[in-house]
Length: 266
Image 1 (cartoon, rainbow, N blue to C red):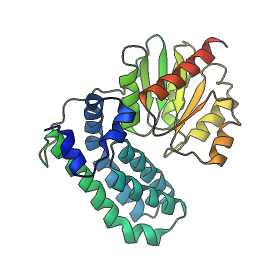
Image 2: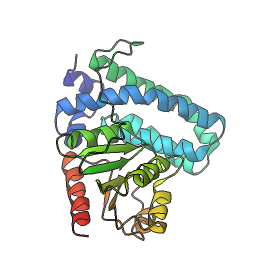
Image 3: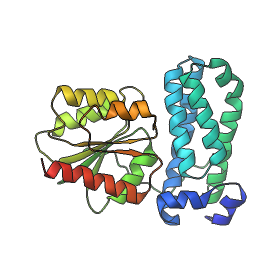
Image 4: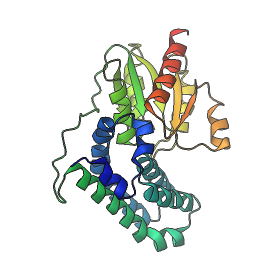
C-alpha cells in the first residue's frame, strides 16, 4: 500500500517524521526495521516487568518512546514516556496497572505499520534489510553505539557512500570493537548513546578515560536523555559534542563532521 494518507487517517504524524527522515522513501525503509524490532522489545518488556527489573524496563520504555516518536506514533510515544518515568521511580503499581494499555498501543502501532507496508499479520516477509552487524573495518570508519536498530540503520543509510559504519548494541560490545581496532587508526569517531542496558554510555566514557582512548577516538553523544544533570556529567569527560534525539539527517551529518574534524586536528 504505502499510502501516506492511510497513516494520517490513523493518527500518525507523518509530516513530523519526515522532518527527521527527510523523505518518504527513507521513512518506508526505516519503518520496516520498526516492525521487525518492536515485537522483540515487547517480549523483553514483559520479562522485565515479571521479574520487577524496573531499571532495564525504563531503558526499554525509553527506547520505545524514541522509536514511536520517530515514526509519528504520538500516543505510543506518550505512553512509553510515562512507563519510562514510572520505571525510573520503581513504581511497580503503575507499571502493572497500565501495562495492558501500553502493550495494546504497541500492537496497534505494529498493525498500522504492517498494513501500510502491505504485510499480512503473521507474515515475516519484510523487504530485505541490510545487515549492519559486520565487524569488517574499512578506511574511515564510524562506530555507532546504540541499542536501537532504527537509529543505527538510519545513520548507516546517511553515510552509506562515505564511511564504513560499525555498530554496537551496548557499551560492552563497543569497548570490544574499540580495543580490537585501536591500533589500525581506522575508527575516526564514535557516536555513543548514554541510556543502554548492560554496560551504559557512562561506563564506556569511564573506560575511555582510564585507558586514555579519547586521544585516539573522539566521542560524541547521541541521546534522548536531555536532563541538565546528565548533560553536565557527560561534559566532565572530553567529548566533542552532544546530539539529542530525535535528530534528522542534517543534525547527524553536522555532529559526525565535528567529531571527525576533531580527530583530524589532534
